Length: 220
Length: 90
Image (cartoon, rainbow over all chains, first blue to last red):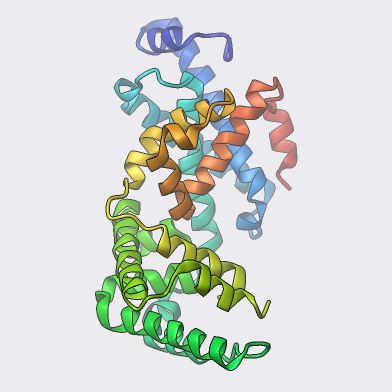
Protein backbone atom coordinates (compact mmCIF):
# COMPACT_ATOMS: atom_id res chain seq x y z
CA UNK A 1 0.00 0.00 0.00
CA UNK A 2 2.89 2.34 0.82
CA UNK A 3 3.88 3.06 -2.75
CA UNK A 4 0.53 2.50 -4.39
CA UNK A 5 -1.41 5.44 -2.96
CA UNK A 6 -1.87 8.46 -5.17
CA UNK A 7 -1.17 11.89 -3.73
CA UNK A 8 -4.88 12.40 -3.18
CA UNK A 9 -5.24 9.04 -1.46
CA UNK A 10 -2.39 9.83 0.91
CA UNK A 11 -3.99 13.11 1.93
CA UNK A 12 -7.43 11.58 2.22
CA UNK A 13 -6.23 8.64 4.32
CA UNK A 14 -4.05 10.76 6.60
CA UNK A 15 -6.97 13.09 7.22
CA UNK A 16 -9.38 10.23 7.82
CA UNK A 17 -10.05 8.69 11.21
CA UNK A 18 -9.94 5.26 12.77
CA UNK A 19 -8.33 2.30 11.03
CA UNK A 20 -7.83 4.09 7.71
CA UNK A 21 -5.80 6.86 9.28
CA UNK A 22 -3.90 4.42 11.50
CA UNK A 23 -2.85 2.39 8.46
CA UNK A 24 -1.73 5.51 6.59
CA UNK A 25 0.23 6.75 9.61
CA UNK A 26 1.90 3.38 9.96
CA UNK A 27 2.91 3.39 6.28
CA UNK A 28 4.11 6.99 6.58
CA UNK A 29 6.19 6.13 9.61
CA UNK A 30 7.72 3.17 7.76
CA UNK A 31 8.67 5.44 4.86
CA UNK A 32 10.23 7.99 7.18
CA UNK A 33 12.19 5.38 9.10
CA UNK A 34 13.62 4.09 5.83
CA UNK A 35 14.41 7.66 4.78
CA UNK A 36 16.28 8.40 8.02
CA UNK A 37 18.18 5.11 7.85
CA UNK A 38 19.02 5.77 4.20
CA UNK A 39 20.64 9.06 5.19
CA UNK A 40 22.38 7.53 8.21
CA UNK A 41 23.78 4.70 6.09
CA UNK A 42 25.44 7.27 3.81
CA UNK A 43 26.91 9.18 6.74
CA UNK A 44 28.18 6.44 9.05
CA UNK A 45 31.24 8.51 9.94
CA UNK A 46 28.98 10.76 12.00
CA UNK A 47 28.07 7.84 14.29
CA UNK A 48 31.44 6.30 15.00
CA UNK A 49 30.96 6.40 18.77
CA UNK A 50 27.53 4.76 18.73
CA UNK A 51 26.48 1.12 18.76
CA UNK A 52 24.16 -0.48 16.21
CA UNK A 53 21.24 -0.31 18.62
CA UNK A 54 21.93 3.32 19.54
CA UNK A 55 21.93 4.34 15.87
CA UNK A 56 18.69 2.44 15.26
CA UNK A 57 17.14 4.22 18.26
CA UNK A 58 18.20 7.59 16.85
CA UNK A 59 16.57 6.61 13.56
CA UNK A 60 13.35 5.65 15.34
CA UNK A 61 13.32 8.98 17.18
CA UNK A 62 14.07 10.88 13.97
CA UNK A 63 11.29 9.11 12.10
CA UNK A 64 8.86 10.01 14.87
CA UNK A 65 9.91 13.67 14.82
CA UNK A 66 9.62 13.71 11.02
CA UNK A 67 6.17 12.15 11.20
CA UNK A 68 5.01 14.95 13.48
CA UNK A 69 6.56 17.56 11.16
CA UNK A 70 4.83 16.05 8.11
CA UNK A 71 1.44 16.02 9.84
CA UNK A 72 1.95 19.60 11.05
CA UNK A 73 2.69 20.74 7.48
CA UNK A 74 0.18 18.60 5.62
CA UNK A 75 -1.79 21.63 4.46
CA UNK A 76 1.40 23.04 2.86
CA UNK A 77 1.60 20.20 0.32
CA UNK A 78 0.78 21.75 -3.07
CA UNK A 79 0.90 18.62 -5.17
CA UNK A 80 3.85 19.78 -7.29
CA UNK A 81 5.74 16.56 -6.56
CA UNK A 82 4.91 13.05 -5.52
CA UNK A 83 3.62 13.11 -1.97
CA UNK A 84 6.30 10.65 -0.94
CA UNK A 85 9.07 12.90 -2.33
CA UNK A 86 7.66 15.73 -0.26
CA UNK A 87 7.63 13.40 2.77
CA UNK A 88 11.20 12.20 2.26
CA UNK A 89 12.60 15.70 2.61
CA UNK A 90 11.28 15.97 6.17
CA UNK A 91 12.98 12.71 7.09
CA UNK A 92 16.23 13.73 5.43
CA UNK A 93 16.20 17.14 7.11
CA UNK A 94 15.89 15.62 10.57
CA UNK A 95 18.38 12.85 9.75
CA UNK A 96 20.99 15.39 8.66
CA UNK A 97 20.60 17.50 11.78
CA UNK A 98 20.82 14.38 13.96
CA UNK A 99 23.92 13.11 12.17
CA UNK A 100 25.80 16.41 12.36
CA UNK A 101 24.89 16.83 16.03
CA UNK A 102 26.29 13.37 16.79
CA UNK A 103 29.48 14.11 14.90
CA UNK A 104 30.11 17.27 16.89
CA UNK A 105 28.82 16.04 20.23
CA UNK A 106 31.34 16.77 22.97
CA UNK A 107 33.53 18.90 20.73
CA UNK A 108 34.05 22.45 21.82
CA UNK A 109 33.64 25.26 19.33
CA UNK A 110 35.31 27.72 21.69
CA UNK A 111 38.63 27.31 19.99
CA UNK A 112 37.32 27.98 16.48
CA UNK A 113 34.86 30.63 17.64
CA UNK A 114 37.27 32.90 19.40
CA UNK A 115 40.37 32.64 17.27
CA UNK A 116 38.80 34.45 14.34
CA UNK A 117 41.48 37.06 13.78
CA UNK A 118 44.27 34.55 14.27
CA UNK A 119 42.72 32.09 11.85
CA UNK A 120 42.48 34.56 9.00
CA UNK A 121 45.88 36.11 9.65
CA UNK A 122 47.49 32.69 9.71
CA UNK A 123 45.77 31.85 6.45
CA UNK A 124 46.96 35.09 4.84
CA UNK A 125 50.53 34.44 5.98
CA UNK A 126 50.66 30.93 4.56
CA UNK A 127 53.46 30.70 2.01
CA UNK A 128 51.82 29.66 -1.23
CA UNK A 129 54.29 31.25 -3.56
CA UNK A 130 56.19 28.20 -4.78
CA UNK A 131 55.84 27.76 -8.52
CA UNK A 132 54.46 31.24 -9.07
CA UNK A 133 55.99 34.10 -11.03
CA UNK A 134 56.69 37.24 -8.97
CA UNK A 135 53.63 38.91 -10.53
CA UNK A 136 51.39 35.98 -9.67
CA UNK A 137 52.76 35.81 -6.16
CA UNK A 138 52.14 39.53 -5.65
CA UNK A 139 48.61 39.22 -6.96
CA UNK A 140 47.87 36.26 -4.71
CA UNK A 141 49.13 38.18 -1.70
CA UNK A 142 46.99 41.17 -2.65
CA UNK A 143 43.87 39.01 -2.98
CA UNK A 144 44.49 37.34 0.38
CA UNK A 145 45.10 40.70 2.01
CA UNK A 146 41.85 42.10 0.60
CA UNK A 147 39.92 39.09 1.84
CA UNK A 148 41.52 39.46 5.29
CA UNK A 149 40.66 43.16 5.44
CA UNK A 150 37.01 42.54 4.56
CA UNK A 151 36.71 39.73 7.10
CA UNK A 152 38.39 41.66 9.89
CA UNK A 153 37.10 45.16 9.18
CA UNK A 154 33.82 45.00 7.28
CA UNK A 155 32.01 42.00 8.73
CA UNK A 156 30.05 42.19 11.96
CA UNK A 157 31.37 40.12 14.84
CA UNK A 158 28.67 37.53 14.27
CA UNK A 159 29.21 37.35 10.49
CA UNK A 160 32.94 36.92 11.06
CA UNK A 161 32.44 34.25 13.68
CA UNK A 162 30.05 32.25 11.50
CA UNK A 163 32.26 32.57 8.43
CA UNK A 164 35.38 31.45 10.31
CA UNK A 165 33.58 28.45 11.76
CA UNK A 166 31.98 27.30 8.52
CA UNK A 167 34.48 28.27 5.83
CA UNK A 168 37.78 27.89 7.64
CA UNK A 169 36.92 25.13 10.12
CA UNK A 170 34.16 23.31 8.21
CA UNK A 171 31.76 23.22 11.13
CA UNK A 172 28.36 22.07 9.77
CA UNK A 173 25.77 24.80 9.34
CA UNK A 174 23.19 23.24 11.67
CA UNK A 175 25.80 22.80 14.38
CA UNK A 176 26.77 26.47 14.10
CA UNK A 177 23.09 27.42 14.30
CA UNK A 178 22.50 25.18 17.31
CA UNK A 179 25.50 26.49 19.22
CA UNK A 180 24.59 30.11 18.48
CA UNK A 181 20.97 29.45 19.41
CA UNK A 182 19.67 30.53 16.02
CA UNK A 183 18.46 28.83 12.84
CA UNK A 184 19.67 27.87 9.39
CA UNK A 185 18.04 30.89 7.71
CA UNK A 186 19.86 33.32 9.97
CA UNK A 187 23.20 31.61 9.40
CA UNK A 188 22.64 31.60 5.63
CA UNK A 189 21.80 35.32 5.72
CA UNK A 190 25.01 36.10 7.61
CA UNK A 191 27.08 34.16 5.10
CA UNK A 192 25.23 35.78 2.21
CA UNK A 193 25.98 39.25 3.56
CA UNK A 194 29.62 38.27 4.04
CA UNK A 195 29.86 36.94 0.46
CA UNK A 196 28.35 40.15 -0.90
CA UNK A 197 30.90 42.27 0.92
CA UNK A 198 33.77 40.08 -0.29
CA UNK A 199 32.47 40.12 -3.86
CA UNK A 200 32.06 43.88 -3.85
CA UNK A 201 35.57 44.42 -2.54
CA UNK A 202 37.26 42.02 -4.96
CA UNK A 203 35.36 43.39 -7.94
CA UNK A 204 36.01 46.99 -6.86
CA UNK A 205 39.73 46.14 -6.87
CA UNK A 206 39.37 44.84 -10.41
CA UNK A 207 39.86 41.15 -9.69
CA UNK A 208 37.95 38.87 -12.03
CA UNK A 209 37.14 35.32 -11.02
CA UNK A 210 39.03 33.71 -13.89
CA UNK A 211 42.29 35.48 -13.13
CA UNK A 212 41.94 34.78 -9.40
CA UNK A 213 41.40 31.10 -10.02
CA UNK A 214 44.28 31.02 -12.47
CA UNK A 215 46.53 32.57 -9.84
CA UNK A 216 45.50 30.16 -7.12
CA UNK A 217 45.34 26.98 -9.17
CA UNK A 218 48.61 27.34 -11.08
CA UNK A 219 50.57 25.95 -8.14
CA UNK A 220 48.44 22.84 -7.61
CA UNK B 1 41.61 25.60 3.87
CA UNK B 2 42.82 23.39 1.04
CA UNK B 3 42.98 24.44 -2.60
CA UNK B 4 39.77 22.80 -3.77
CA UNK B 5 37.80 24.26 -0.90
CA UNK B 6 39.26 27.71 -1.43
CA UNK B 7 38.45 27.57 -5.14
CA UNK B 8 34.86 26.56 -4.37
CA UNK B 9 34.58 29.40 -1.87
CA UNK B 10 35.90 31.94 -4.38
CA UNK B 11 33.36 30.75 -6.95
CA UNK B 12 30.63 31.05 -4.33
CA UNK B 13 31.70 34.62 -3.63
CA UNK B 14 31.54 35.58 -7.29
CA UNK B 15 28.24 33.77 -7.84
CA UNK B 16 26.64 35.71 -4.99
CA UNK B 17 23.48 37.57 -5.94
CA UNK B 18 21.91 40.53 -4.20
CA UNK B 19 18.75 38.51 -3.63
CA UNK B 20 18.94 34.85 -2.70
CA UNK B 21 16.21 32.58 -1.40
CA UNK B 22 16.38 31.39 2.21
CA UNK B 23 16.87 27.83 3.42
CA UNK B 24 13.18 27.64 4.30
CA UNK B 25 12.19 28.69 0.78
CA UNK B 26 14.63 26.16 -0.67
CA UNK B 27 13.20 23.42 1.54
CA UNK B 28 9.74 24.33 0.31
CA UNK B 29 10.77 24.08 -3.35
CA UNK B 30 13.34 21.29 -3.40
CA UNK B 31 10.86 18.42 -3.77
CA UNK B 32 9.58 20.00 -7.00
CA UNK B 33 13.16 20.57 -8.14
CA UNK B 34 14.03 16.89 -7.58
CA UNK B 35 10.85 15.76 -9.30
CA UNK B 36 11.80 17.75 -12.40
CA UNK B 37 15.28 16.24 -12.38
CA UNK B 38 14.08 12.68 -11.98
CA UNK B 39 11.63 13.15 -14.85
CA UNK B 40 14.52 14.30 -17.08
CA UNK B 41 13.65 17.99 -17.19
CA UNK B 42 16.09 20.86 -16.76
CA UNK B 43 15.39 21.70 -13.12
CA UNK B 44 18.15 24.31 -12.96
CA UNK B 45 16.64 26.24 -15.87
CA UNK B 46 13.12 25.95 -14.47
CA UNK B 47 14.08 26.87 -10.93
CA UNK B 48 17.33 28.88 -11.06
CA UNK B 49 16.92 30.33 -7.58
CA UNK B 50 16.82 26.86 -6.07
CA UNK B 51 19.87 25.81 -8.06
CA UNK B 52 21.71 28.93 -6.91
CA UNK B 53 20.84 28.33 -3.26
CA UNK B 54 21.90 24.69 -3.46
CA UNK B 55 25.28 25.78 -4.84
CA UNK B 56 25.77 28.14 -1.91
CA UNK B 57 24.35 26.20 1.02
CA UNK B 58 26.16 23.02 2.12
CA UNK B 59 23.34 21.85 4.41
CA UNK B 60 20.57 22.24 1.82
CA UNK B 61 22.82 20.70 -0.82
CA UNK B 62 23.48 17.61 1.29
CA UNK B 63 19.74 17.20 1.82
CA UNK B 64 19.02 17.72 -1.86
CA UNK B 65 21.56 15.04 -2.89
CA UNK B 66 20.07 12.51 -0.50
CA UNK B 67 16.53 13.33 -1.64
CA UNK B 68 17.48 13.05 -5.31
CA UNK B 69 19.25 9.72 -4.80
CA UNK B 70 16.41 8.27 -2.76
CA UNK B 71 13.87 9.41 -5.35
CA UNK B 72 15.94 7.84 -8.15
CA UNK B 73 16.05 4.54 -6.28
CA UNK B 74 12.30 4.68 -5.87
CA UNK B 75 11.83 5.53 -9.55
CA UNK B 76 13.97 2.54 -10.53
CA UNK B 77 12.02 0.22 -8.26
CA UNK B 78 15.06 -0.16 -6.01
CA UNK B 79 13.84 1.51 -2.85
CA UNK B 80 15.77 -0.28 -0.06
CA UNK B 81 13.75 -2.28 2.44
CA UNK B 82 13.87 -1.64 6.18
CA UNK B 83 15.87 -4.84 6.68
CA UNK B 84 18.39 -3.88 4.01
CA UNK B 85 18.91 -0.48 5.60
CA UNK B 86 19.21 -1.82 9.14
CA UNK B 87 21.83 -4.29 7.94
CA UNK B 88 23.90 -1.37 6.59
CA UNK B 89 24.23 0.05 10.11
CA UNK B 90 27.38 -1.39 11.76
